[in-house]
Length: 357
Image (tube, rainbow, N blue to C red; front, side):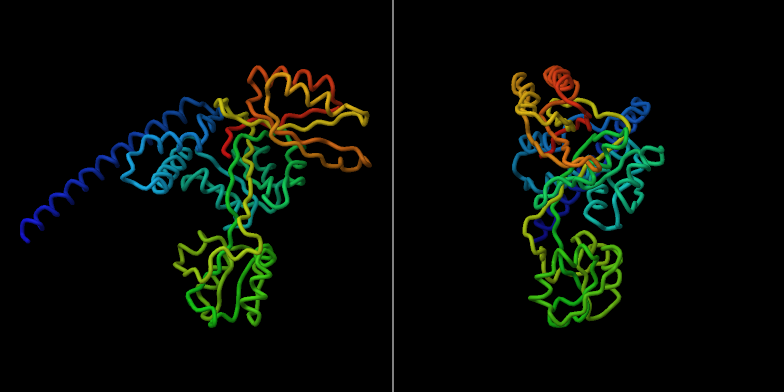
């Protein structure tokens, strides 16, 4: 027994030494991130390789002793912390505090970022345009409704460009200090959360009073101090207050997710696995759209998305939103856009960024 205890002490000492070694390596990595910040001199270095590719390479290198989901979680946080050191970003996001957009911004830029809540996408983009923020984060596509047209139209009116994207699940949890559904008399939720979970509330808590609040953070704060109440919010909102999850993923639409755009004043660098977004309009004549799109096919540029929307104030005129594989500086994309410009009434490139999906 004494020998086994001695062996355990030795192993724990080895772990402690390894922890100190890991800390030293992380600090060395942080110093390199700060060096990137100095060398960049204000240039946008948001794109070296996409996080998806980076994590995939790490997973290949893993021996299997650590579960891959833990590998992803640990190194995602390492990258987020490094990104904050590299860019020292002040980030404007579409509120409210605790929303999926806010969580996405914090996930991407890390704890070192400074976050500014904005009431509209236009306000978030204006913060960047005026130099009060480095990036703006906003939703621009949902898995249920497709492209958020208002977000794209607002971005179109600025000189900013998309420099990154982030996809995140939009899952609501019912959280409370009481683990028993039968004890819940009040539910705090934002209007959006209430609407997203309406059928669940009618079915499972028909007698509970639903109280609308301005943000998920307010909802969990109130639920934490109010016995017999619960909050509907993203899971992350309840962790700091140690609220228990009464029921997870209670939204009426299962597996819903959002795609968030990250916009800045300077273009993202080429990574070799990029997506380029653009808007254009053509004459209302037979074959006009085909004549434009064929330029991508002829140069081997993959067309990933095509969607049309009416042009505000111009009757039945339409503008087309397109996503293609490649960076705006890639030769095939450059020559395709040169040809597209000659065949369109209007063309605007919204940006190129590392492909995350």
